[in-house]
Amino acid sequence: MICAGVDIGSTTTKVVLLDGDVIRAAVVVPSGNLPGKTAAETFRSALKEAGAAESDVAVVATTGYGRRLADFGDMVMTEIKACAAGALFRPGPDGPIHTVIDVGGQDTKVVSLDDSGEIEDFSMNDKCAAGTGRFLEMLAAKLGLTYEEFVADALASRTLIQMNATCAVFAESEVVGMLARNVSKSDIAAAAHNAIASRIASMTRRVGQRGGFCFVGGGARNAALVRAVQETLNRFVHVPEGAQTIIALGAALGARQKATKGGAATRGSAG
Image 1 (cartoon, rainbow, N blue to C red):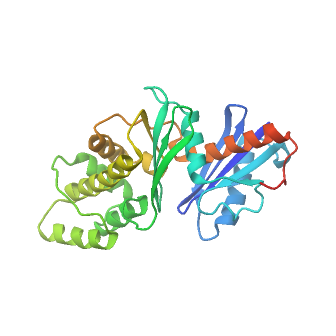
Image 2 (cartoon, rainbow, N blue to C red):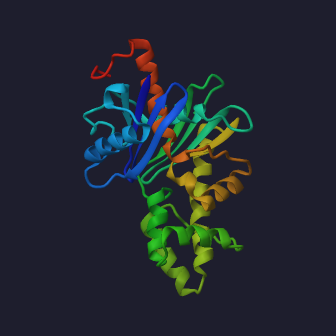
Image 3 (cartoon, rainbow, N blue to C red):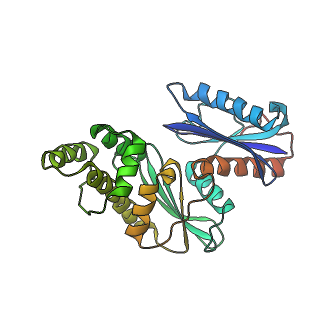
Protein backbone atom coordinates (compact mmCIF):
# COMPACT_ATOMS: atom_id res chain seq x y z
CA MET A 1 0.00 0.00 0.00
CA ILE A 2 1.52 3.31 -1.13
CA CYS A 3 0.78 6.53 0.75
CA ALA A 4 1.93 10.01 -0.23
CA GLY A 5 3.05 13.06 1.71
CA VAL A 6 3.14 16.43 -0.05
CA ASP A 7 4.91 19.30 1.70
CA ILE A 8 4.17 22.58 -0.10
CA GLY A 9 6.68 25.04 1.30
CA SER A 10 7.32 28.67 0.46
CA THR A 11 10.58 27.82 -1.32
CA THR A 12 10.34 24.17 -2.32
CA THR A 13 7.70 21.48 -2.70
CA LYS A 14 8.53 17.98 -1.51
CA VAL A 15 6.73 14.70 -2.22
CA VAL A 16 7.45 11.37 -0.54
CA LEU A 17 5.84 8.08 -1.56
CA LEU A 18 5.88 5.53 1.26
CA ASP A 19 5.23 1.82 0.69
CA GLY A 20 5.13 0.18 4.11
CA ASP A 21 8.38 1.40 5.68
CA VAL A 22 10.11 1.79 2.31
CA ILE A 23 10.44 5.18 0.64
CA ARG A 24 9.66 4.54 -3.02
CA ALA A 25 10.28 8.12 -4.15
CA ALA A 26 11.36 11.48 -2.72
CA VAL A 27 11.22 14.52 -5.02
CA VAL A 28 12.12 18.15 -4.29
CA VAL A 29 11.39 21.04 -6.69
CA PRO A 30 11.09 24.85 -6.39
CA SER A 31 7.51 25.84 -5.47
CA GLY A 32 7.36 28.66 -8.00
CA ASN A 33 4.49 31.13 -8.38
CA LEU A 34 1.76 28.48 -8.66
CA PRO A 35 2.40 26.12 -5.73
CA GLY A 36 -0.82 24.15 -6.23
CA LYS A 37 0.11 23.35 -9.82
CA THR A 38 3.70 22.62 -8.80
CA ALA A 39 2.48 20.19 -6.14
CA ALA A 40 0.42 18.25 -8.70
CA GLU A 41 3.34 18.09 -11.12
CA THR A 42 5.73 17.00 -8.37
CA PHE A 43 3.30 14.29 -7.27
CA ARG A 44 3.23 12.98 -10.85
CA SER A 45 7.04 13.08 -10.97
CA ALA A 46 7.22 11.05 -7.78
CA LEU A 47 4.80 8.47 -9.20
CA LYS A 48 6.99 8.18 -12.30
CA GLU A 49 10.11 7.76 -10.16
CA ALA A 50 8.40 5.01 -8.18
CA GLY A 51 6.99 3.31 -11.27
CA ALA A 52 3.49 3.64 -9.82
CA ALA A 53 0.11 4.95 -10.94
CA GLU A 54 -2.10 7.36 -9.00
CA SER A 55 -4.56 4.51 -8.51
CA ASP A 56 -1.85 2.69 -6.53
CA VAL A 57 -1.86 5.44 -3.86
CA ALA A 58 -4.22 4.84 -0.95
CA VAL A 59 -4.12 8.28 0.69
CA VAL A 60 -2.43 11.62 -0.07
CA ALA A 61 -1.70 13.94 2.87
CA THR A 62 -0.71 17.55 2.29
CA THR A 63 1.18 19.83 4.65
CA GLY A 64 3.18 23.06 4.59
CA TYR A 65 2.08 26.64 4.08
CA GLY A 66 0.32 25.69 0.83
CA ARG A 67 -1.28 22.51 2.15
CA ARG A 68 -4.80 23.56 1.12
CA LEU A 69 -3.76 24.42 -2.43
CA ALA A 70 -3.43 20.81 -3.59
CA ASP A 71 -6.87 19.71 -4.75
CA PHE A 72 -5.73 16.08 -5.12
CA GLY A 73 -5.09 15.63 -1.40
CA ASP A 74 -7.26 13.45 0.83
CA MET A 75 -6.26 14.94 4.18
CA VAL A 76 -4.45 17.96 5.60
CA MET A 77 -1.77 17.67 8.28
CA THR A 78 -0.13 20.49 10.22
CA GLU A 79 3.60 21.02 9.72
CA ILE A 80 4.25 20.53 13.42
CA LYS A 81 2.66 17.07 13.45
CA ALA A 82 4.31 16.09 10.17
CA CYS A 83 7.69 17.33 11.41
CA ALA A 84 7.43 15.25 14.59
CA ALA A 85 6.27 12.11 12.77
CA GLY A 86 9.01 12.31 10.16
CA ALA A 87 11.76 12.93 12.71
CA LEU A 88 10.67 9.95 14.81
CA PHE A 89 10.80 7.73 11.73
CA ARG A 90 14.53 8.54 11.39
CA PRO A 91 15.98 7.81 14.87
CA GLY A 92 19.26 9.41 15.85
CA PRO A 93 22.46 7.62 16.89
CA ASP A 94 21.99 8.75 20.49
CA GLY A 95 18.56 7.25 21.02
CA PRO A 96 15.04 8.69 20.73
CA ILE A 97 14.55 12.18 19.34
CA HIS A 98 13.03 14.68 21.78
CA THR A 99 13.85 18.02 20.13
CA VAL A 100 13.36 18.74 16.43
CA ILE A 101 14.75 21.87 14.75
CA ASP A 102 13.27 22.73 11.36
CA VAL A 103 14.68 25.65 9.34
CA GLY A 104 12.73 26.42 6.19
CA GLY A 105 12.67 29.22 3.67
CA GLN A 106 10.32 31.51 5.59
CA ASP A 107 10.03 30.07 9.10
CA THR A 108 11.91 28.19 11.78
CA LYS A 109 10.33 25.73 14.19
CA VAL A 110 11.53 23.91 17.28
CA VAL A 111 9.35 21.02 18.45
CA SER A 112 9.67 19.25 21.79
CA LEU A 113 8.52 15.61 22.06
CA ASP A 114 7.75 13.62 25.19
CA ASP A 115 8.96 10.08 25.88
CA SER A 116 6.08 8.57 23.90
CA GLY A 117 6.79 10.73 20.85
CA GLU A 118 3.82 13.05 21.34
CA ILE A 119 4.23 16.79 20.81
CA GLU A 120 4.89 18.44 24.16
CA ASP A 121 5.54 22.03 23.06
CA PHE A 122 6.78 24.02 20.08
CA SER A 123 8.10 27.44 19.17
CA MET A 124 7.87 29.07 15.74
CA ASN A 125 9.52 32.08 14.16
CA ASP A 126 7.34 33.08 11.19
CA LYS A 127 6.92 36.84 11.67
CA CYS A 128 10.32 37.99 10.45
CA ALA A 129 12.73 36.83 7.75
CA ALA A 130 15.63 36.85 10.22
CA GLY A 131 16.40 33.31 11.34
CA THR A 132 15.26 31.61 8.13
CA GLY A 133 16.81 30.26 4.95
CA ARG A 134 15.56 33.27 3.01
CA PHE A 135 17.52 35.54 5.37
CA LEU A 136 20.77 33.77 4.53
CA GLU A 137 20.01 33.91 0.80
CA MET A 138 19.39 37.66 1.09
CA LEU A 139 22.71 38.27 2.86
CA ALA A 140 24.59 36.10 0.37
CA ALA A 141 23.21 38.25 -2.45
CA LYS A 142 24.20 41.40 -0.52
CA LEU A 143 27.76 40.10 -0.43
CA GLY A 144 27.69 39.24 -4.14
CA LEU A 145 28.02 35.52 -3.40
CA THR A 146 26.06 32.48 -4.48
CA TYR A 147 24.44 30.63 -1.60
CA GLU A 148 27.00 27.83 -1.96
CA GLU A 149 29.88 30.33 -1.82
CA PHE A 150 28.29 31.98 1.21
CA VAL A 151 28.14 28.66 3.09
CA ALA A 152 31.71 27.75 2.09
CA ASP A 153 32.98 31.15 3.26
CA ALA A 154 31.23 30.71 6.62
CA LEU A 155 32.88 27.32 7.09
CA ALA A 156 36.28 28.83 6.27
CA SER A 157 36.03 31.63 8.86
CA ARG A 158 38.09 31.38 12.03
CA THR A 159 37.07 34.73 13.54
CA LEU A 160 34.07 35.18 15.84
CA ILE A 161 32.22 38.47 15.38
CA GLN A 162 28.72 39.43 16.49
CA MET A 163 25.80 40.35 14.28
CA ASN A 164 22.44 41.66 15.42
CA ALA A 165 19.99 39.59 13.37
CA THR A 166 16.78 40.47 15.19
CA CYS A 167 15.58 42.18 12.01
CA ALA A 168 16.47 41.29 8.42
CA VAL A 169 16.46 44.94 7.33
CA PHE A 170 18.82 45.99 10.13
CA ALA A 171 21.06 42.99 9.47
CA GLU A 172 21.38 44.02 5.83
CA SER A 173 22.44 47.50 6.92
CA GLU A 174 24.85 45.95 9.37
CA VAL A 175 26.48 43.97 6.56
CA VAL A 176 27.02 47.21 4.63
CA GLY A 177 28.70 48.68 7.70
CA MET A 178 30.93 45.64 8.14
CA LEU A 179 32.05 45.79 4.53
CA ALA A 180 32.87 49.48 5.00
CA ARG A 181 35.10 48.47 7.95
CA ASN A 182 36.85 45.89 5.74
CA VAL A 183 35.45 42.90 7.61
CA SER A 184 35.97 39.88 5.36
CA LYS A 185 33.03 38.31 3.58
CA SER A 186 33.98 35.01 5.20
CA ASP A 187 33.68 36.45 8.71
CA ILE A 188 30.40 38.18 7.85
CA ALA A 189 28.98 34.90 6.51
CA ALA A 190 30.00 33.11 9.71
CA ALA A 191 28.48 35.86 11.85
CA ALA A 192 25.17 35.53 9.99
CA HIS A 193 25.05 31.78 10.60
CA ASN A 194 25.97 32.24 14.27
CA ALA A 195 23.22 34.84 14.69
CA ILE A 196 20.62 32.39 13.39
CA ALA A 197 22.04 29.65 15.62
CA SER A 198 21.64 31.96 18.64
CA ARG A 199 18.03 32.57 17.65
CA ILE A 200 17.43 28.83 17.38
CA ALA A 201 19.06 28.28 20.78
CA SER A 202 16.66 30.79 22.34
CA MET A 203 13.72 28.91 20.82
CA THR A 204 14.98 25.57 22.15
CA ARG A 205 15.28 27.03 25.64
CA ARG A 206 11.63 28.06 25.46
CA VAL A 207 10.44 24.54 24.66
CA GLY A 208 13.00 22.72 26.79
CA GLN A 209 16.28 21.05 25.88
CA ARG A 210 16.17 17.32 26.47
CA GLY A 211 16.93 14.03 24.75
CA GLY A 212 18.31 13.63 21.27
CA PHE A 213 18.35 16.64 18.91
CA CYS A 214 17.38 16.41 15.25
CA PHE A 215 17.83 19.07 12.52
CA VAL A 216 15.53 18.89 9.46
CA GLY A 217 14.31 21.05 6.60
CA GLY A 218 16.27 22.81 3.89
CA GLY A 219 18.43 24.52 6.51
CA ALA A 220 19.80 21.13 7.57
CA ARG A 221 21.55 20.91 4.20
CA ASN A 222 23.66 23.95 5.18
CA ALA A 223 26.81 22.58 6.82
CA ALA A 224 27.76 25.99 8.23
CA LEU A 225 24.40 26.35 9.93
CA VAL A 226 24.54 22.83 11.35
CA ARG A 227 27.99 23.57 12.78
CA ALA A 228 26.85 26.89 14.24
CA VAL A 229 23.80 25.30 15.86
CA GLN A 230 25.88 22.51 17.40
CA GLU A 231 28.45 24.96 18.74
CA THR A 232 25.79 27.30 20.14
CA LEU A 233 23.84 24.49 21.81
CA ASN A 234 27.08 22.75 22.81
CA ARG A 235 25.71 19.37 21.83
CA PHE A 236 25.50 16.97 18.90
CA VAL A 237 22.57 17.57 16.56
CA HIS A 238 21.60 14.68 14.30
CA VAL A 239 20.90 15.43 10.63
CA PRO A 240 18.86 12.49 9.29
CA GLU A 241 19.06 11.10 5.79
CA GLY A 242 16.74 13.05 3.51
CA ALA A 243 16.51 15.90 6.03
CA GLN A 244 14.83 18.23 3.52
CA THR A 245 11.97 15.77 2.94
CA ILE A 246 11.33 14.81 6.59
CA ILE A 247 8.08 16.82 6.80
CA ALA A 248 6.79 15.27 3.57
CA LEU A 249 7.73 11.88 5.04
CA GLY A 250 5.78 12.73 8.20
CA ALA A 251 2.75 13.60 6.07
CA ALA A 252 3.08 10.25 4.27
CA LEU A 253 3.12 8.53 7.66
CA GLY A 254 -0.05 10.41 8.59
CA ALA A 255 -1.61 9.23 5.32
CA ARG A 256 -0.59 5.67 6.12
CA GLN A 257 -2.25 5.90 9.52
CA LYS A 258 -5.47 7.12 7.91
CA ALA A 259 -5.34 4.37 5.29
CA THR A 260 -4.75 1.73 7.96
CA LYS A 261 -7.67 2.92 10.04
CA GLY A 262 -10.07 3.46 7.15
CA GLY A 263 -9.02 0.70 4.79
CA ALA A 264 -7.01 1.04 1.60
CA ALA A 265 -9.80 2.48 -0.53
CA THR A 266 -9.76 5.93 1.02
CA ARG A 267 -8.80 8.25 -1.89
CA GLY A 268 -11.10 11.22 -2.10
CA SER A 269 -12.45 10.95 1.44
CA ALA A 270 -12.63 14.03 3.67
CA GLY A 271 -9.79 14.62 6.07
